[in-house]
Image 1 (cartoon, rainbow, N blue to C red):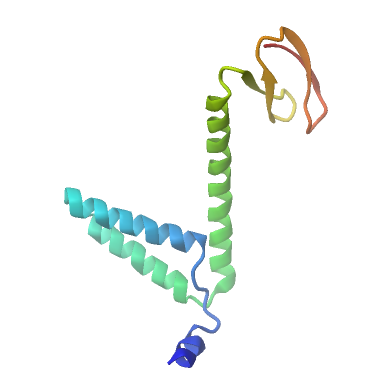
Image 2: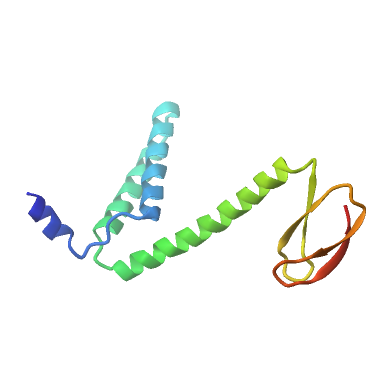
Length: 130
């Protein structure tokens, strides 16, 4: 039996990060609609069908492109959320601002008066008040 499944799955795409996200979204949608009611089960079933299509697909290149696009979007969102978390944590001791040249986020200590800040990415020197 194991060999038959392995033979069937040979050359198929399988599960990736986008697949996990679709499955989790479908489960959450099913849970929410079972608690609050509504027509979300149809959408949940469509998501499951889409994931099955992606899972059994033999077009590996196309599925890989979809997954890399999804990973790029989630990476930028995670980066922004991490920066917001750090800003919230450091709000009493540090000040954050953007470099005027490259838009990199810089962190400087509060209460130091006017200081020169050098951007580590583009090496631009900025004088700022903290």
